[in-house]
Length: 296
Image (cartoon, rainbow, N blue to C red; front, top):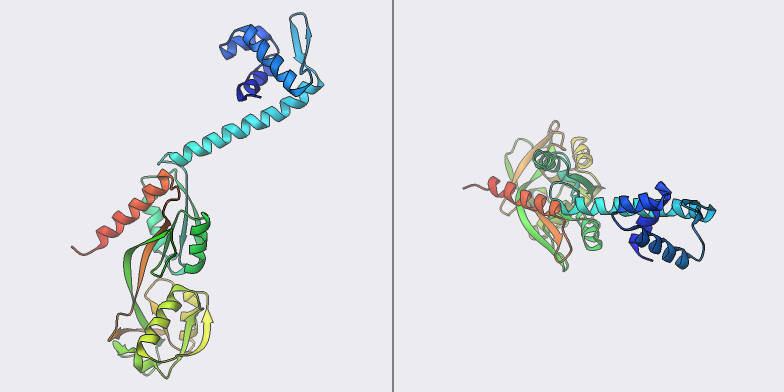
């Protein structure tokens, strides 16, 4: 069975006149008749009742027409979706990003990008780094904004920017009036940290390892705002980047001296996996955006 036979059948079923249907299809009437005859032979049943020049669907034809209509509609829909995917001004981009980037950075990037590409849509997944990597490997994500870490092949990661990490203490803490401290001055404090696996937790653990002390952890959270809230409540201190998700009232942010207290954020994608023109356009937009942010 050929795809063309289904299109010919659909036209003849709609017009129910062999000559007129052939004219609509820009083929000869005998060619249309032969195509329909071959289709009926392959199906093993007649699809039309023929009485002289009159032709109309029989009960087999009516049943088959419904199926053919669905098949052709699905084909047209699939064709349209593929055309949108390969059109850099249309399509959908699947983007993953860290929880802490969802307050302002990712919304701002998407807003700026869509001023020039209003017909491109985004599928967003907000999660911690390990899960983002799984989604990249499975093909569920096109691009991902995530912290620096060892990534398996074929994932490729490129640095975009760096955020300073601060010691966060309650505003009534003895250290709160200081502008900076060393991390060793927090060795005897109770810590409120992100749960294991989160990028911020990995970076905090790296700082503790450098300082050669094991922190006393009283609470582990899923959200930066929750961690900051527990700090405000006086339940401990933390190490976090600055950001809108942190309630600035009730806390003090202290620079950490004597080490590079920072997190490095970059973009990751799976090398060798197909990226649509829309995804490539957004990828280049991100590179260009952060290149402009670098001091000259």
